[in-house]
Image (cartoon, rainbow, N blue to C red; front, side):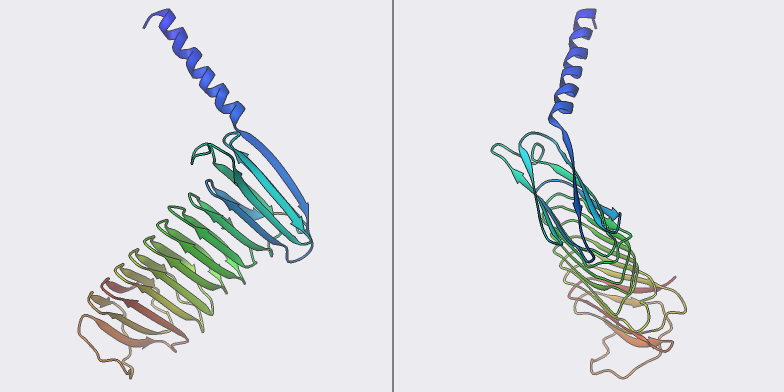
Length: 282
């Protein structure tokens, strides 16, 4: 490559980088709030991540990829609404706005994006996530709140959720629950796989259901639960030593199993129409 060609390439690269740097804007918004703040963030294209911050302040950092978007922010008392406003000509790239939030740990939080990812960690309030299209959802180390997740194709991962009221729904996204316990846990996916790795807590009510997706649950030897599993067209496999129990369902070899382990302090129901179900001992 000649000097002139090399110089032209370098110039073009620098110009492209400069254009990107000029187009991308980063703004910070601060809100003073009282206890039990209610925070909502809605972006058509972009990621949203949330971590705990000060007890009386919400800090929102918005990074826009171009001048094709605006950030609308509004505070009414203890409620804060943040939304991306797409301008004429915006597309998934130029209309992308990524958000980073620092919020009081006990706040009520609602996040929505079509592309994601959506993530939250170390919180204690009620959490709602809506991922349309391919948005992924990742929640970790949260407690004492309701966790509601709804996606279309994006995978969902919950890790270290304790004493939670958990409701998960997906069309084709895979669902992974790792050390998730609480009095009420529901996970449903039409065609995505559901994976559970934990001990099903104490005194909880757990129901994992799919239409065509597989279900796999891995539990320790000292688990204490009442298990019920059935797949209408798929196969079921149990690797635990279950004590037989009386049930109103007919026992169909390879399609159904019922039984208890320990004092059966929790109730676990595994259901699929045609997917495989497997209960494994860690």
